[in-house]
Every structure is written in C-alpha cells, then in structure tokens.
Image 1 (spheres, rainbow over the protein chains, first blue to last red):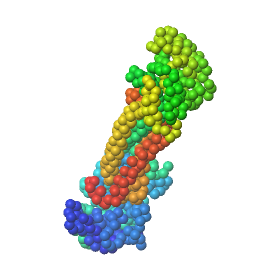
Image 2: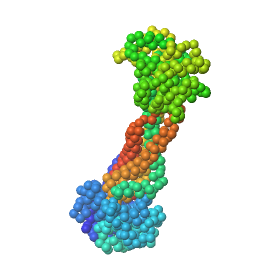
Image 3: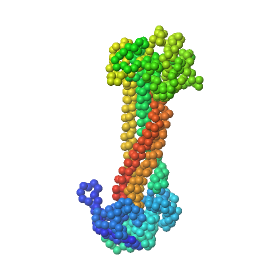
Image 4: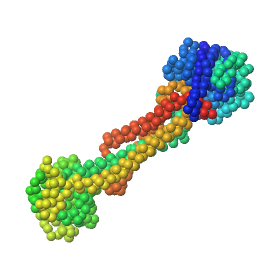
Amino acid sequence: MKLLADNISKSFARAGSQQKLFSAVQEASLLLEAGRLIAVKGRSGSGKSTLLNMLGGLLKPDAGHVFFGETELYTLDDAALSRLRNQKIGIIPQGHTALRSLTVLENVILPVRLYEPERDAAKQAQTLLQEVGIGELAQANPAELSGGELRRMAIARALIQNPPVLLADEPTGDLDDENTELVLRLLRKAADAGTAVLLVTHESAAEPYADEVYAMNAGKLQFVL
Amino acid sequence: MDFIVKFALQNISRRPGRSIAVLLFSVLFAAAIFGGTLLIGSMQQGLRVLNSRLGADIVVVPAAAKTKFNVNSVLLQGTPGYFYMERKVLDDVTGIEGVEKVSPQLFLASMTADCCSASLQIVGFDPRSDFAIQPWIRETYGGLLGDGDIVAGSNVRFTDTRMLKFYDVNCKVAAQLAKTGSALDNAIYANEDTVKRLIAASQKKGMNQYNSFDPADVTSAVLVKVKDGYDIEKVAGEINLHVRKVKAVAAKNLISDVASGLSGMSDMIGICIGTIWILCVLIMMIVFTMLMNERTREFAVLRVLGTSRSMLSRMVISEAVLINLAGGAVGILLSFLFVMLFNTAIGNLLKVPFLMPSVSTILLLAGATLLISILAGGIISALSAKRISNMDTSLILREGE
C-alpha cells in the first residue's frame, strides 16, 4: 500500500489581512511506501502539518492530488473518506489528544467502536498499551498521564486498526529526551512491521530513525537525504 | 444500544460537572415554559367555566345593589351576600323588546353561627324558567331538586348524612358540582321555594337585614337571554330605561371586570414567560456554544480518528437530546407539582378563577415543552457541530496547545 502526494498545494487567507493568501504548501510531491519511515522536518509554521493533514484526508489541497493506492482521496465523499481514514490511516495528532471522558484503554479502542461497535478490541488494545509501555495505565483517566505517556497512548490508538499508513504530527514535541527516543523507536518499529510512516517534526532527533528525510521550508518540500 | 447513544451517555456520566450544569439549565428552561403556560392556561380555563356558568346575556339586579354590594362578588365569585327587588320586575323585563327568556334568582347568605352549618352563598332558581344553573347541575345530577334539596359547590364540606343546616332548616345535599376553580365552588344551589323557606327562617330569627317583605314577593336577580339578532348592550339599555329601580348589566361586562384583571395578569405573566423564553433560548445558545467551543479539540480528535461529519452531528445531538430530555422531564414534573400543590393559593393570591386544564391538555403541553427543550438544545448543538466539522482540524489541534 502506498500513499502518494502529487504536486499538492494549499493556501490560507492571512488572518487580519485583506490582501494576499499565505501559501502553506507549494506543489509538494511525496511517496510513502510500506515499511519505510519518512521524516519531514522544518520550523514551526513551515507547512509540515498542513502537508500531513492533506495526506490524511483532513484538508483538501487547492491543487494536486492525493492517492491512497489507486483511490484519489478527495474524490470520496466525507463519509467514505472518514471511514477510509479510520481503517487505513492512523494519525497521531499534535499535542494531547485523549478524550477526557474515556479511560486510556477506551481511548485506544475508540477508532474500532466508531464503525465496529460489536468487535471486542480490548485485548488488542491492552497488548498495544503493553508494547508502548503503559499497559498498567489502561484503566487510568488521561488526566493522570504525563505528556510522554499521552503520546504513547496516541500511538497505540493510531495502531489499533493495523493501518497500512501512519502519520505522526510532532509526536515528540515537548517531550524529554528519554520519551522522545521511546516514541521514535515505536514509530520505527511500526515501519519495520510494514507500516508506511510519515513523521513531521521540528527536531533533528528523528533523522537517525528515518529512511528518508525531507525539509519543509516556507511551504516547499525538499529532499535532504 | 446504538454506539452513538452509548457514547453520548458515557460522555454525560463521565463529565458530571458539565452535565449537571447543562441539566439544571434545561430544568429551568422546561419549568419556565411548562409552568408558565400551565398557569395562564389554568386562569383562562377558570374564566371559561365562570363564563359558561353565568349562562345569561344580561343580569338585572336592584339599582341599590350596585352601590351596596359588589355584585360581581355575589354573582361571579360566590361571596355571601343578598339584595332584593320586587318580583314584578320579572314581568317588566319580560316585556322589553329583544328579551327571549327571563329567570329569577333569589339569594341568601348563611352565617357562621349555631343555626348554620357554614357561611355560604345560597342561590335559589326557578326550575321552570331557569336556563343558567340547571344545565351545569345536570352534568352531575340528573334528578329534579325537591323541596329542601340542595346542590353543593365542590368546596362545600358535609358529612356522610349529607345534611346541611341553614337557619335551623335541614337541607339534603342531592349532589355536588364539579370544580370551577372560582368562589362559585363555595356556593349552594336550591329551588326558589327552598330558598324562600330559608329566607323566612332567617327573618324569623332576626338574622336577615330585610325583615319587611314576604319572600314570595321578591327576587334578587333576573337573568335574561336575549333573542338572536338583538344587541345585548342595547337591550340592557332598554331595561335600564323602562324598568325602574334596577340595573341591567351585560354579562360580558360583569365578567370583563374579572377578565380584564385576568387579562392584565395573563399579559404580565405572558410577558414574563416570553422574556424567560427568549432569555432561556439566548442563554442556551451561549451555554451550548461555549460548551461546544470548549470541546472543539475533542471533536477535532474524533474527526482525525475517522468520525464523519454526520456521525459527529449525531453524537452531539444525541448528547443534547438526552440531557434536555432528562432536564425537560424534571422541569415539567417540578413545575407541575408546584402548580398542583399551590393552585388554590395561586388562585386566591391572584384573585382569579383558577382551574387546571384537562389531563389531555396537560399531557399535550408537557409533550410540546419536551419537544421544544429537545429541539432548542439539539438544533443549537447541531449548528455548533456543523461549524466545528467545517473547521480546519489541524488548526484546531494546534490552537488547543
């Protein structure tokens, strides 16, 4: 399974300004393949998250196409695109994204419950939580978790559907060195297991774990190594 | 159970602080709508029954009665009181053009003394000519009232013997009327002969301020039915012009004193309820919008995890519906209990007839209130959910940091 961005661009109107659009991503192309981890690095505001969101089916590009396998993502209606995202694309969003009304285990199972409420995914979720090192926190409330533990919970949640594609948006932001290394190792492990992983980050710590590194600068994507 | 409903229930139960705040607001919203409307409806129902019980187009009373008594109190509110005029007024009024039917009524007030069971207004009617009282007596009593028989208003208390004593004359309670919500519930009704006997007994005991007449020669009021096509006010004017020492009043004017008081009050309550409605809707919009904004990040996460716009809307609407359903039911129940427990006190306080609408009307009102509560919360939540669904998810997640 591959995810292809073909010359995609996205612009936004500048807040508070009546003139000109701000070009967040300019004609970016990227191929994400099974078993590979691609890191896109760049400063804050360089367009990395916009690129990730377009690849994840969350933000329609102004120009260009995004293909998931043979399917052009933005030809799908919202219901089909949402379902595809649920089952084929695992996304680790920026920041702390646990739902506070659910326990850690319930947060991890949530993607399954959305479309397959009868499927018992508790065992699988527990295994994933063990793998990311927070198995003992399964019944805890997210408010009791540290930042690093919440990111690991988000990784487990993104993997619960065994998606062929995993998109991680600043998964190591605000984490200490130990947690950063732990999270990067988990993403590498997912890639080694056959998942196509895209990691956007402003830190260089991810480079050793990546198969390819791109840089994003003022909306332009450039291959680095 | 559907996942979306389960999820909504989970969200409600696991965030008790937020849920209770919204629930309380929903209770207030439903209580204001249901309780207020029930209050106005009860007053209007009371007035309707009062109107139908009067049953006449014109009421003719002694001219002196207009100054000596509050005729409204005696005729409409059952306040014990009496006044008399010569019985020949009956024939004089019958002769006025436009008069279709006339019927005399004879009043007497019993006293709080050993001779009487209670202080009540006693109304005597002529069974042959009466068209005002007997129709609603027949609703509860099909027989003819014999001499000494009385029909009691719904508030009149009597023992198992069903006997009441007035000026040491024993009367048998043949039937008890349905509630009107007005002071008419405190009156008793009998045929004229019975009341004549009671008047004579009161005179004999020196307990009647009018001792110089024969009860057979007087009447207290003449109820008039006007022929179709005649103007009631004009016929009343003709009676005032041609019959001496009487005052003819169109019944609607008698009632209008009560009605205008009621109308003023119901306008005031209506304005209050309208204001509460508008305030509630505005506050509900603000509360739900704030609540939705507070949860923007949560909704963005759900979108990231694959929740479609329609699913997200259903989740938000389900939550709002469940909370408003519970809050609405509690609000309706509390305001119903309040009106039920204090309806007599409210009626006395407002000095208006107060009669609860029928069970079916109350159920209909409860259903409508519940529907409005659910719709208000549901629509506001759905609009917020739609707005959030259309926002840039990545931006929301970034802003939330």
